[in-house]
Image (cartoon, rainbow, N blue to C red):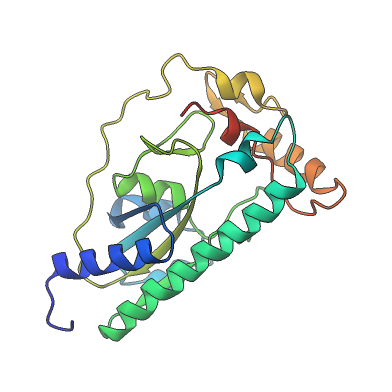
Length: 225
């Protein structure tokens, strides 16, 4: 498809994402979200113009089994979801390479700043720029259908693609307080999200027998569907 249009490339990549189990797919223009890039990834992202955002839908029964802390089955499901996301990103990147264009798959869940729990960039900001949803007061990425029950991955590229349109900036959480009331760290309020409090609770949970990583899942579970 070297002579394909950007519409055809976008459709082909969407099919690849769906075939790899992704529930959502979109394309973002990178210029408005480059501020979310951490310094470590900036050199590799030079000249790349679009971000491909994909989301894997987490299991309702797994999430519904969470009360006020992560469970062992959620820990395993979280790892599998990240593997599925990274595999989808690799397949999308392989397609782009066949078009003789550049592709940079960004890991779904690779922490590079353990103090503040940051990755290479904000997958959520790119998904929002692609028009797939918005970022809620819990700092979760929220989709109109799947709500907070998505994990995200991103592929940066210079392949010409059709970008989505960000949703209008509205307070889409409205009067809902579900995440505020449920957060075991007290890290969510009407004013927004306290990253430091959240990170502290994640470190505490990581010391639970069998968990061993910074996960929670409580706000994901309680976000209304």
